[in-house]
Image 1: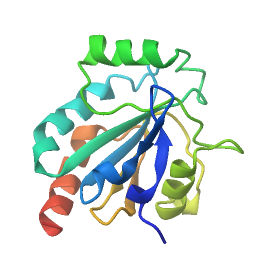
Image 2: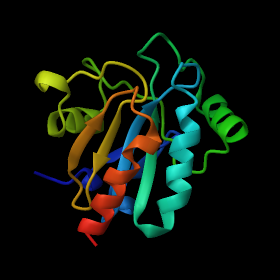
Image 3: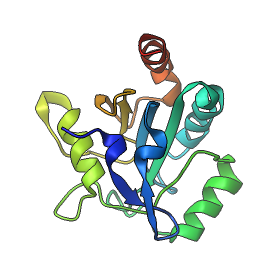
Image 4: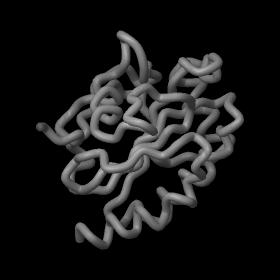
Length: 163
């Protein structure tokens, strides 16, 4: 099976972003939203990004409007919100669907590799997080209620284990 880092996704500018730019890194991939009760998690995600970005780790954000219509903006509005409200410096890609017939292939793969409770595959809400190892395989899924700082020890273990 191909690595997640061999896939392409839609960039915020409408172009194509090749995830090979993140090959060999530990990734935390998150479906985000600007008007959600979990939106303050942007702060924790950014803190993880800043702490580990120079040590083989990257946060990748994917805005999604499928849960309570909590990401209604266009790419420019989302980028402005992320930058001005949370000083986000990690990559935020194009708005996508994570469930249903139009689900982005990246999230189809993440859900298959790291199913939820009792083997469920659908994503339940904004700020579901997937931890991807250096070989490009999703190895863990975290619920929206899991705060980014609560994942830090798993990130650290994975970073140390794989070099």
